[in-house]
Length: 277
Length: 277
Image (cartoon, rainbow over all chains, first blue to last red; front, side, top):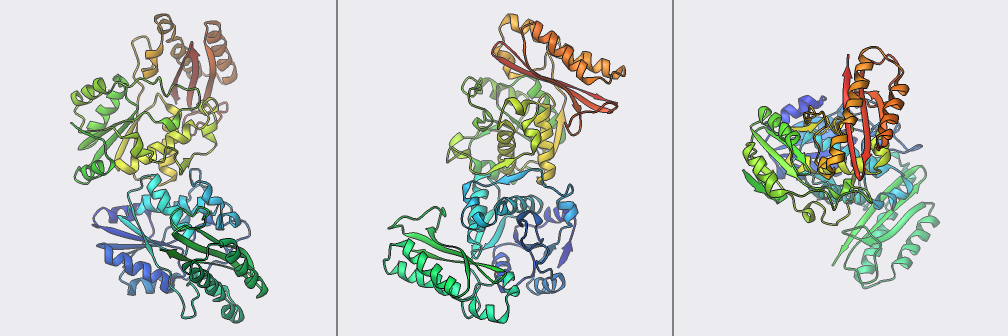
């Protein structure tokens, strides 16, 4: 596995690489990331994984500084997973003027769901993914469904800006008790970790009620919120939305997704389940 | 010369084309465009020219509907100039939802100079050029210096978003009396056409004064504006700026550009001259 830090060197490698699959990450890799890598390997001649904690997508007061950097462990996992190139960009080369002057501006969905609690987050995601796509020039790129709104924004961006990349969604990896794999799980105390699967249990329960024909989304959302809050969570949102557009879902909709974000202590967890009929 | 209208067909052609140069245009081609094509041919194996009148970069009350569409004449000129592919996109394929959801948002320079008089114009330019780059995937692209602020925005965008395209600036084509070649010259009456070269004469005169050591930019700007207005022009701006950044120029600056935009009757003309020492 080559480790490449320079944009020019990465582009030179790209020119002779055949069909390339790309997995952008912020490092601190877990089984969820490795599932993306496995999917990527099955679909292309070569796999590029990037590790870059992108300052642009963190807001004031968020965990940019605390975000875990575990390069040596990540690098070993990627080598074992058969990755061809690990792109570990130098921040000063990606953001030479520190600020980013040109941004990819997503439509209103960037201000809903997680966007309502993380202003500017999806602009930062759309912009850095565009920069990484322009540098790596992959044929396809794998993204996890765990970050469902991010996946939606990227799919819509690729389509709307005609970016020559196929976006491949990959199912969320979960611990045995259902908790979605996330680097932020590492912030949880033992007690919080034991409580954390309650979020997924509520999403799964809402899915079951929806499959059973329940159409009163607001009651389902309120009941989940109430129980989470009774167990010490601060809930950002629990929402039933249209799966394909993330717009507000109306009764009778066939393709739904239930999304939630809630805080346990200092840790913000997100999760979602699709309900597709 | 192939004429291609579909994005998928254009991309299929691109995959076997070698080094590709790209000249994006809005059609109604004149010698200025053909100079871009000539430069493109010298630098690549294949040349793609696009013709697309981009609704996104026209404001309310601007000349989107009136903008001259002369496809047959344009096509003949490009064939004679040895162009390999004429990309003439279908508007509904480029903007399938009519509105553009994701936009490339330029920094504050988009609101200065021409941007102060054409709100949203440079966002529309940056976005459509990004879409065309993503579709054509050229190795290099040629832009005229006549649209100096546009050239600046595109160079800065390519750099800031890491777009894998070399931007090649090409000198402004001029009529014998100095008037910069432009599709909008076709809007001028015979009387206006006789008056039009005054704009360039002022820019050239300011250049000469700057080269002679004049540092009072404001006086030079005011004198030109005054004379133009005395001859029936409505002046949007005459400004001396830094050539490389388009920021405000201070006395003593070595690399300058003098830019102007002014209206004769219903026609808005722009021009500029560089002063590089």
